[in-house]
Length: 96
Image (cartoon, rainbow, N blue to C red; front, side):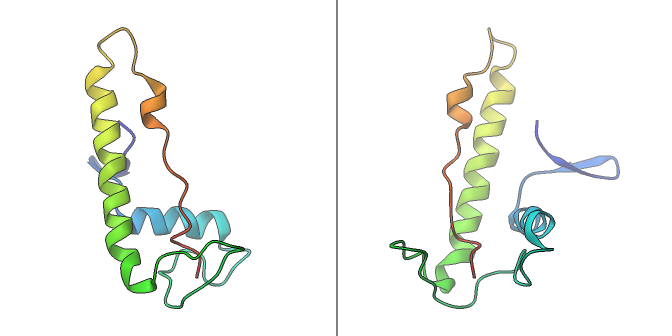
């Protein structure tokens, strides 16, 4: 399963790990990388969710990813896990 390791333990994807990935990927470009959004933004014609909705949406996203990964892990004993099931939606919830 795709989990980060903490010593000998493994942890599911969670909000802090999503922010860690974002900070690692974009931290040298943007001062806000890896931080929760606190302001309303407009991205072209897209209006991302209000900042107050972001934590709940990130939690739902992490929960969905963990469910999909668990499902694929359980199906790996079969003739192969269906990769389209892992296709994840692109989100803009980390844009400040």
